[in-house]
Length: 333
Image (cartoon, rainbow, N blue to C red):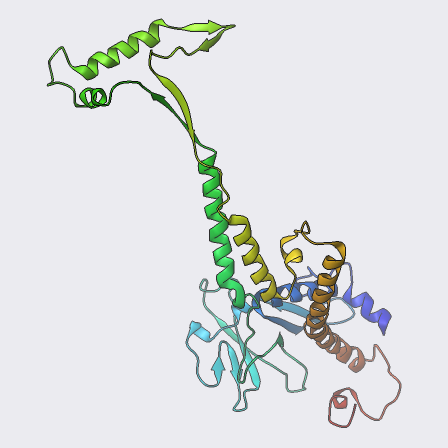
């Protein structure tokens, strides 16, 4: 059985996948990633009659974005967010948009039952309910989305500040008495030869045109008497950015169940023992998530394959009192 499963699940051509892109391991890795982002996994077992492989059971990954109420409507008591339920809240069927991208295309919908009349699963839906009547999963980033937006705005603002700090402005300061600049700015009536502004600009132009001092081909500026050249730059101050960024990252790490060091990849302020203790805490959390997400999805996919292998006689188990379909009945463990 293990040899047959390994050949089927980890085949080079990806025969376990309808799209022939993934192996079983890649299915599980993708499922964990999709669950982290969307809070749920949809995988559809497919019976491929056109397959030339030994096994006809194949699987198709379904994007949670495609599962919705037909027409993207509001739904009702027995149809919630694309999941059709009975009066007990048990999932009966799923409504899948046939378009690859929601809100585009023909807008055709397909109703897929949860189970076939034989009891074989027609849709695998893995999510962790947190309240009564919940039909869809919740993104684990919901609790920290506000802080993520704050962190993004903070870093964008800091980037703009860094760009401004990299700029500089050159100014020439003059020793003119205070009232002279205003006289130059105000000037004299148009047409008069004694216009103060024109006169001072003419003097500046004449001075800088005639006083060109070079050394080795490089021009050395010789300012007008009384002028002073200064470079104006923005003040380079942190303004508490680092501390605020660390506080936001710690809040986000706590919401995601990981340590600050693992999220930020900053181990500069902890010792090896502290980092190891923090990693052990996160490891226990990830082991629990793996037990719920990866193990549950893998078990259901394996069960679909094993059903075909037993019914078609490819694998012959030892004689037992109960058959494949009675294995989950109460008292038949």
